[in-house]
Length: 360
Ligand code: SF4
Ligand code: SF4
Image (cartoon, rainbow, N blue to C red):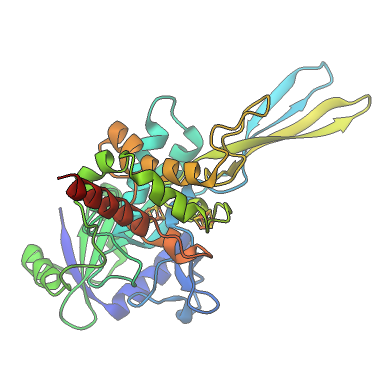
């Protein structure tokens, strides 16, 4: 792996140069304190906030799985034969400023969408996406719990991984793929021979612990969250849940979707042409688990909260051997009523622990 050092001004110039050639997305401050991955326009210096940006409302992985994407279109010819075409156009893109928690989110989505029947729409877009990731030296805010969720320091999947160094405005760039080698050709930089040492010095400056911590190690959660005493906790949180689904929509590891068909009818209700689109879905919505005939497998909000926690810390980890919560903190940050999966998990652990102590 090649490593380079560069200065802030060179980094900015490089980003602008890359943005001139293709779609280049970077977190940008929107109204208030919110950040969003926006396309960088080559002349707008204020779009560049490389050091102080906060977590975006939507994670960058949603660029690989856009809401409302067209899966395919079709039309019928004069002989009555149907012809199908690819839907949304997939262009090359660079997503920069991806933090380790979101990098892990993308890695997990790569695993999910290549498991079993491959999702060609996601995978084609992923293949055309280069990722420039950014290391964190401080927790992004009070909601973050990436260290305890084991995503701090996650580097897999980035073409280039950038770490701020202790020397002011100096950065280390680790090139992790052949695409990264291509990208870095236009950066003014120096080859670095003591990358490990410089990076370690920067990482040693991090606060300890880094962000909020679970009271129980994440490896033990799959068993605890199934304990019968956990039910009471899910019910307490459900009392103030609006079942709006926001926590799902902002989560980097939620990938459920539904599809819709749109027809254009010609003469005598003939389906002459149309398209199939897919849209994000949310397991916290009351109708998510409703099936034909009207039966709902999870009609109560407590059952939906329980399901979400189990998906993140048990069902999907069993299948992919990774925790499916990256500790990004988005669900707690965006929930109108302040429900935070971190609090739910810790309350479950504490209540199970108390129950076990009282039995002894
Ligand atoms: S964002 Fe909050 S209120 Fe909305 S479904 Fe999720 S937990 Fe419930
Ligand atoms: S469950 Fe919440 S904290 Fe965990 S990855 Fe999803 S949005 Fe982030």
